[in-house]
Length: 240
Image (tube, rainbow, N blue to C red):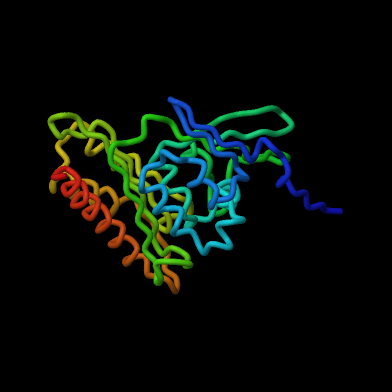
């Protein structure tokens, strides 16, 4: 006979810790509590949290639950992928840690084995210098994403890209970190030509489906336009 077991009262899953090298968020910390605990969080984190569903849901929902369901349109994965997050897993065979980018194996499937649970999400420091999260939906609030995207970048004093991350939800069977997009801009100036190279990669890489929220063509073009939006916003940030 099947049993449903609640892990809500496990203290370890509610831990939050920020150190000089990382931010660790327990898998059962409610979304609404993350912003309160993470006092030094960049503005994008608060904007991202506010876009999750509605306040009553955020008071109950967790990052652990959102990630473990492995929905390709979940709002947590793109930003966490762009921040190079890793996850900690515990089970009968012990504990293990792996990059979030390796967690999803297929549509609503993950590497979790029978008896394993996700315990902690860890975000390394220093955080990227410029990060954005975009949610495209019929309504800005309390709606499921058609496309979600997060992009992060560090540049050197000459404006060349030291590190870039482009992550998307709603464009494949799993949340997707587009590694080839990172590679085509690494060490290069972040300009219109770089944006076009990333967009060409997205044309080849993204494999969205069509449904009542948007066609596959629409999702692909929206994703490409968000890269350009990220570029424009990075230029505005440079002028400040």
